[in-house]
Image 1 (spheres, rainbow, N blue to C red):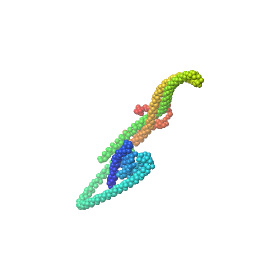
Image 2: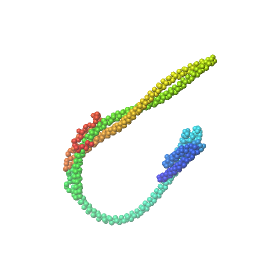
Image 3: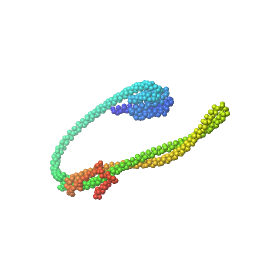
Image 4: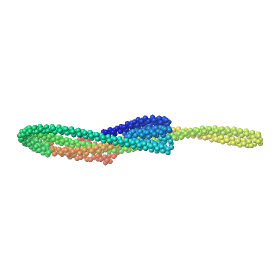
Length: 618
């Protein structure tokens, strides 16, 4: 039944997947239509083809997923092709007609038999029409009127909603009918399976009935044979009962003898085990046992001997462990003190290197500030040099202008001289004319006076221009000398900037190196503290091991052995436990380690005198 349901569901999914693949192929086939539409409308072929290709890829990927999400992507890719074609026809008379493609694609999505697909496609169409009608209406409608476009969008949206609702209802009804068909198929399959099982049960019961009849006949035959054999067995039983009574009497006598032997063995074992329970390992069973139990006596004696040897060996090893634990504990305590001194030294070294790192960082900052100051001075020097160069150029232009003015003044002086000559000539001509030229003579006199004053003014201007030219020449020389001096200063400042930059770079590198060294020292300090903690744990473990060895020796002392007495004290019984070293508590280090110079302590006096303990010097 379950297999039939899975087959039906798999068949529907297979149809949906095939339909999705067919739609994906159709989507790929629509890519050239976008390019053709763009060519007809005179729009960009690359944009139209690229957009259509992206939607085609989306459609193919969705078909490859073979799931509900993939089928939704197929529907969105098909709607995207319609969007690309409509946008490609922007400015063409067919753009409004291309909207029919949206409704056709929405109807084509019905082959996927998924209501979600219809809703997703309709939502994408509605969002496309509404958003582009406001943002970029030219990609949707040929009209640029927002009101007209919104009316068209409302009409198209209503049509899309109605079509989507109809398609959604049709797909839903078809899916419900399919599910009902699957359920009916399951019921029919279940009924057929139950009928088949009923037939098999009937056949099995019939077979059991026939087998029971055959068994009954065989049992009847066997009962007859058993009756005859029972009579023969009765006679044999009488004879066997007689023999059994004789054997029972013999068995009773043998059992009495065996019980006596067992009582003897048990009594001897009871005495030996009682002494063994009291810790006496020297007691053995010397009286021989019966032949059947002699191996038990030998095994007991062997076990007692081996137990005595083992206890002796354990006692010796307990003594050895006690001495070794004492050596380990002394070495651990000594090493803990050395670790304490090393931790103090590392801590002080870390503090010193931290101070050096801070000083180096300050020096690097000062060098960097000096570099910036030198760079600023160099920039100002370069600006001053530029200004001086411009001043030299301006002075040169002023000098040239002074020369031009001198020429103009010379020209004015020449004009005044010529005017004076003309005025003299005019006066002579006016004198010849008599009374008729008297007025002209007055004008000629005024012109001559004006020419004289112009000549004198021109001479004064010329003298001023000569003096100004000399001063300008002197200023040009001074400015040029200033420019040369500023250029020398700029070169010197540039050299200083180079050296200061090198110093700053070296200071920064030194600061980085010191910081790395400081980090390494801090890590070493952390490791040293961890080592001290580990030595504390080691000391605790050795003390625990010594206590356990002492308990082991006490337990062995309860046993009595021939070779040695367990009352001999072991080497570590009277040894005092090692005092708690302050190095175990690293947060409470004494301030005596914080001194100038090397903070390492002289702990050479703590070295063990026994050469056997020299391994602790690691």
